[in-house]
Length: 344
Ligand SMILES: NC(=O)N[C@@H](CC(=O)O)C(=O)O
Ligand SMILES: [Zn+2]
Ligand SMILES: [Zn+2]
Image 1 (cartoon, rainbow, N blue to C red):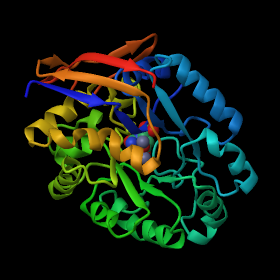
Image 2: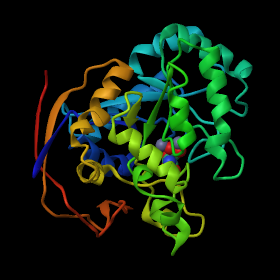
Image 3: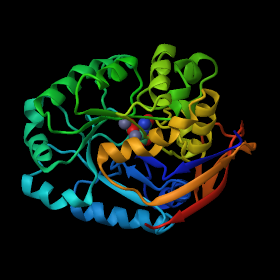
Image 4: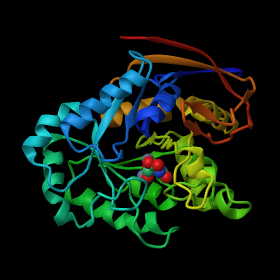
C-alpha cells in the first residue's frame, strides 16, 4: 500500500504551552489533527474558569481556526466544590491529576494520593461524569514509579466505579495488564513509548530529546505497549504527550523532561503500523477509541499520507523559540500528501 487515509486524528494528551511556544507548536498539531486534549500544566496551572476559557481562546487564535478543536482540561485540586465543577463541566473534557513535583510544572499537584484525601473532588467528578486523567508515578526509584502506582489506580478505580479514569502515557506491561481488570480504567500511550526503551535514552550517548517522564522502560514493556496499540485495544488511545521545551532547556545540564513529536506523529504511526501489518487498526487507535471512551464526535478532517520520503526538520523556530523534534534530521518513509477538512 502506498497511500493511507487518517480520519479525524485525535491526540488525547498534548502540551501546547502558551505565548510564542503556543504560536509555534499550535499550528503544527492543528494542521493535521482534528482535535487534542490539552494539558493544564501551565505556570500557574489552569484552576479557574476564567483561566480555562482565556487559554482556550489563545489556543484557538494560535491554531488554524475552525479546523481544530482544543479539548481543554482543569488541573486537579482537592478543594474544588461541587458547584464549581458543575458550572465548569461543559467547558472541560476531563480533569488532570498530578502528584506534586512528579513532572514538569506539577509543583502544585496533590501531596497525598490517599483516596480519602481525594474523595470530595472525586465524588463530585463521579456524580457529574467528569473523567479523571492521571500522571501515575510514585516518587520511588525511577524505573519502578509507574509499577508502584498500580495499587493507587486500583484503589481509585474500585472506590469510584462510575468515574472514568485514564492512566496517562503508560510505559509498562503492568499498566497494560491492569487495563483489563477494571471496567472504568482506560489509558493513553505516546508514540515514543511504542518505539524506544531506556537504551535509546541512556544506553549509549545520552539523548536528551528522548528524555521524558515517565522514562522509557524495558523491551518487554515497549513490546506490550506496541502489541496493544497495534491491535487497537479498545481501552487504549493515542496521546502523543508531545511536550515541547526550548532547545537550550533540553541540551544542557538539568535537561527538561518531554519529547516533541507533534509534527512527525502521523507519519511515524503510519510507518509503524504498516511495518507491523496493522494499518487496518490505525484509525481506531488514533481516533475511534477516543471518541467512544470520551463519548464525543470530532470535527471531520481527513489526512492523506503517501509513501514518500520526509526529512524531519532539525528544529522548528518562531521568534525566540527553537524546538527540536524526535527524529530531527532523519528520514521517514511516509509523508503527509493532502489534508481535507470540512465542518459537519
Ligand atoms: N512528559 C513529560 O516528560 N513532560 C510533560 C509533563 C508530563 O506529561 O508529565 C511536560 O509538560 O513537559
Ligand atoms: Zn505526565
Ligand atoms: Zn504530558
